[in-house]
Length: 392
Image (cartoon, rainbow, N blue to C red; front, side, top):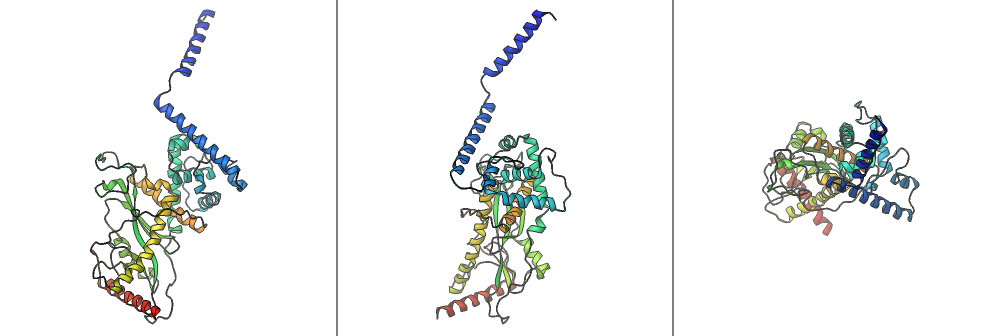
């Protein structure tokens, strides 16, 4: 190749470079650059604001992407260093030998931080891939591997209580205690391919409408105690109409699960049994209204737990996942971590919304056994007697 050919070749290379530099950006490239610019501005403003307020040095280091702990986004304060350290410790000491996907490119602390970022923020996988300098596909693998490992800790961290709860003398005159509050909420998910219904599909699924496709949400059945700790959770497809029946059967088969002098409470629509008490739905006199009002105080605890769960793990407000098993894994991960954070004293108060917890108040009771009726009437009599005594 002579000198002239070299010059021509070099000129073409320079011309191509100039064309690439000056040609208009595509819509996708423009959107990506705008997203990145907005994130950088938000992070810069957050750091600037924090520098004017006294903050622990480790917190500022985390926000700035300190050594070994990775970068953080503007909403990452929802999960602080204490939570991350606890989860890292749980994964390191768990019996599961499953290898964490992507570990060759991401340390365990970074894996925990990345996964908590995806759970706690309404953020895209693309944004997380830029933040952690990883390929989008690898972010998927790391996140779902993390969920799988956390799911393996379910039996250890979502446990049924043991020990008696009865108070006072066992003379039949003392009020039994509520062991837990049972209820259900819906987690919107993306419809699987081939099941889209344009007329019933709602952006972000605004409080799941009855006519929406049942595969566009998951049913999350929860049982919580007075502290808000989850004692039981069951995740099923939206088409599953079972409400408490599986738990009812389990309690009948294993009566020792219910400590003496205790019972569960649930809203109307759940089965009324000797172990699960529901409100009266008809013939409401003073006794029945007092009983219902007492139960409503407990229902408010469950409503707050659901609000807190969705406030901390904002991805539960809409899971952009069309795969049932993966969506279930993410929801179960949030439930397990809810108990972890509660034990650490890290509680985020969410705003209670009436639609968050499904209620069928006003409907007739579908499943009622005679033992349940007798137990509810006996407790109602005790409540009324206690109320009248207190007024004297």
